[in-house]
Length: 47
Image (cartoon, rainbow, N blue to C red; front, side):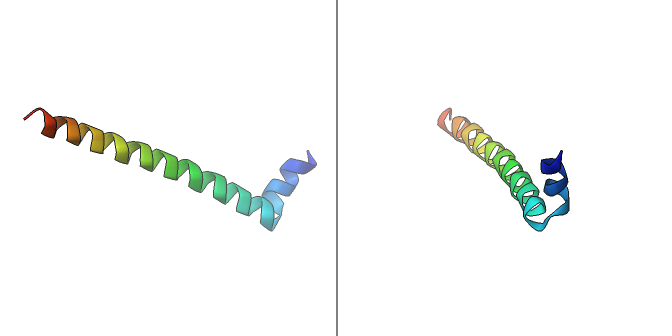
């Protein structure tokens, strides 16, 4: 329980949450970016 309290009430806990959220958003963005580039590449190669 102390870990959860520390996670949401200390500066290093909040920073950890921020980093985790940033990494998840970045992973989602990279996935979408690379999938769109792969799709675009497949369209161009079929011409």
